[in-house]
Length: 300
Image (tube, helix red, strand yellow):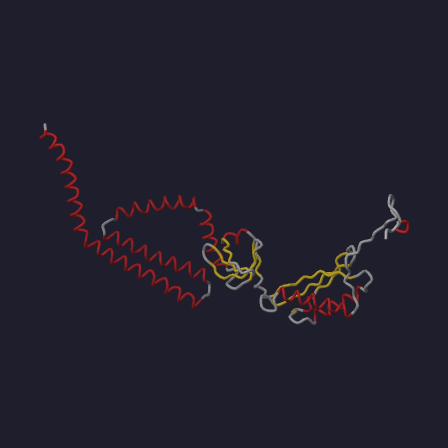
């Protein structure tokens, strides 16, 4: 009885030992190939890094498109490393495993494509933006109420430094799906001001004073494109618009020029005795149900 039990236990143990011995023999036989594979891995990692840096160096001599250079250098890095992996699998005799790995990568890639649609959309958008180049570094742009200077472009997002001093990361797909403004393309920007004058003032005189003031203001460009027009009869003033162009984004800046224009118009109005009226309210005490002011008793 005991002998039968010993024989039943000995068979699985012997099978395990034989398996382990077989694996050990295979490992010893494969050891030279594994050493070669390790050396190949190091070599191809170095080659991939060197090839990527070399391409960037050559590319930036011909173009300053950072996003496109980063894209191509990443592709070169991945291509060199992929070639190395195929060679290493061949050295290890895992050619059949390579076919299974590629099939598995295809299935995983399809699943990840559905799971990370936004990331894929941003990546594709980054490639499109890299070729179209609707803006470049240092450009002043505005999108989704965010305005600032472009400081960095990636394949996934674009970094904007706002005028308030914050860094904002905007997904690249937003630039293709939503309108955005580039204030640096034409290198100029229009300043629009709304001003009101008294009903008692001479409107022709007001127009002449304002146009003369803006034309003589330092920093104004395209002086033949200055636009002046009266827009409305307001409750206590007649309002007009004055529109003029400045160099942008170079100095003088937009806010500075707008402030200078307001001060210059106010000074010119004071010298010419033109009134910018305060809001006026008329009180009528004689309407139906009311009492005339002359009939009211004043308490001292």
